Picture 1 (tube, rainbow, N blue to C red):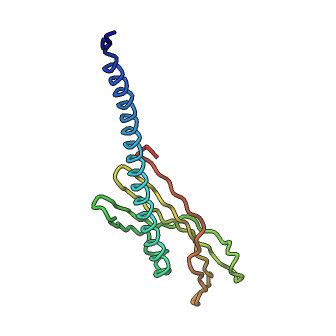
Picture 2: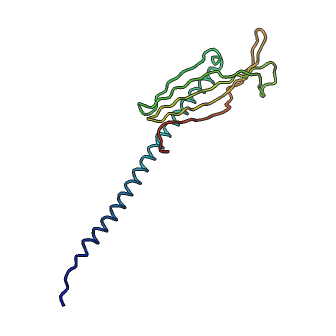
Picture 3: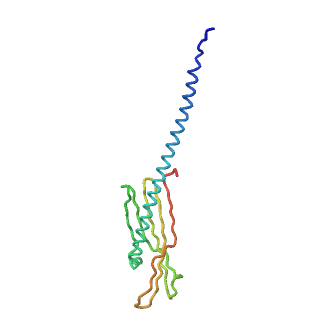
Length: 166
């Protein structure tokens, strides 16, 4: 009895190659998506760190120059990030005035509210970091040495836009 080859090896090898190609294409797509996600996370981290640097610069100015807060505003700073295209623009502005100062029992007093806004631009991502704070000070009729509290942080937010994928 003589066996004739039926040629079934070629179709089997072609099916195996097709299945392996599909697995390879899926692995490539997954790797590309993970690389984009990692890049987006790195950009978001850079933007967050740069925004926090801007907020820290604004708070440092407020702590070092409390007397200039009512006269020297609005303050505008521009900081550069680690990448040449990364920037943050910091503004410090007076927002509200009221007379509620729970830490001070002297009368009359005023509470000055301020906001530091750090506008961050990193690649296609734009974020706005906002830090609010207030200062309480005694109002003196005539010449006197008023009591003044240090800047007190009151709220903090981050708003982002641009660059999808995360």
